[in-house]
Structures are given as C-alpha cells and as structure tokens.
Image (cartoon, rainbow, N blue to C red):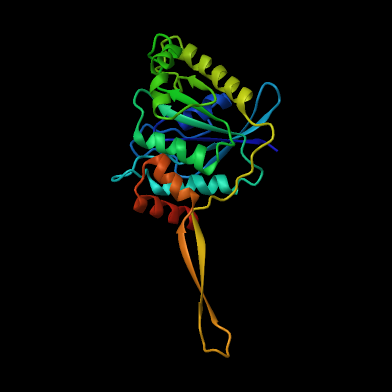
Length: 263
C-alpha cells in the first residue's frame, strides 16, 4: 500500500508543479490562469529510488477568504474530508508556500492542519517555491527562517525549490534545468527522510461537545421527584484551538467548525 503524502497550500503556490517535479514527468495539470487551481484532491503514485511507494495528494488551493480571518472554507472542508477518509493513514504533510511573503492565511492553514486536525502527530515539511532566480536558493531560507519561526511555522525540514524549468533555450535545454533537477533531489530526499514508516490514522476533532444538566422537581411528599435533563451543545477543544491558535473570533471559529463537522 503506498504511503499517503498530502501536498497542500494556497492556489498558485506550485503544488501541482512539485508533484510533476517529484514524479519526473507531467501528470498533474498546471495552469498559469487566474482560475487554474486544483478543485479536487487527486492522487498520483510514485516509487522512490529506495523502492518506497508514495501516493501524492494534490489538493484544492487554500486561498484567503474575502473577509474576516477565515481562509476559503470550501477548500478547507475538502482537505479535511480527504484527511479524515484516508483510512490507511497519513505519512507526511507537505506545505507549499510561494516566496517571499508569509500570509496570515498560510499561518492559519499550517496550524489548522498540522496542529489541530493532525494533532502534531504527522511530520510537516515546508516547500518554498518561486526561488529559481535566486543566486543560491538555500540562502533565502537562511535570511528568512526567523520570520517563519516568529509566525509559529517550524517545519520538520524545508526545501527551497524551483518548480519550473523556465523558458526553452535555442539548444533545446531550459533556463532553470539545473535548479529544477536540484529541486527534485531535494524534495525526494526530504520526503524519504521525514515520512512516517507507520502512518498515523486520523481521528475526528471535538468541534462541539454536549453538556448534560440534571435537576429534580418535587412532586409532593409521597412521590419521587421528577428528573429533568437539559442537553446543551458547547464549544469543544477544536473551537478553543481555532480561537487561541488561529486568532479567529468565536463566531468565525463556530461557523468553520459547523462546516467541518457537517463535511
């Protein structure tokens, strides 16, 4: 059974390009258009040089919403459903971000899926794309790693990569062929070193919980009191974490939790 590797991030971050990079040929559709985002989770199987079988999941782009602090809810729901339905477990999260800016929605998505949904039980690595024009891709991380730590994004490993080969040269080669091949080695090496050999099997998050209040009403000296039970639904641990870790308001957290609970 292939090990599940979930690749997630914003639309346009380069998730599909990275999957093509790791597969060694184009299998995932890539578009430069404004609406060229992956809409549904799609699996792509790959075998490493050591013989390990992976199943890369190309997922819907987690774009920031039009208002408030909640990123695109529909994409979050789809990714949550994917994770909950992976009965054979998850071995690695690959979070893809495009340099140079760290968006608030990116921080929320990292916390939501790594810490709240996967309970920090699944290793999460970071792939930073769009660095092909850097003289040294690794130097970008050296200069910016403190910003990631300040935002609470501390990956098990990182890879600064180029997901594109660039323009074609007259001799048939491409402008970023060297960076592209180097990026493939980095990505596959990072995944080989950090995936779980024994996959973590997802468990549902406690978005809401029920509190039962019991009271007794007297029915006279010769009769037993009548028991009354009142069941109230209150915020569970998941909502508390959305508020404390993702900075959401109580209303935002409850609305997102309702969508995730319904699926």
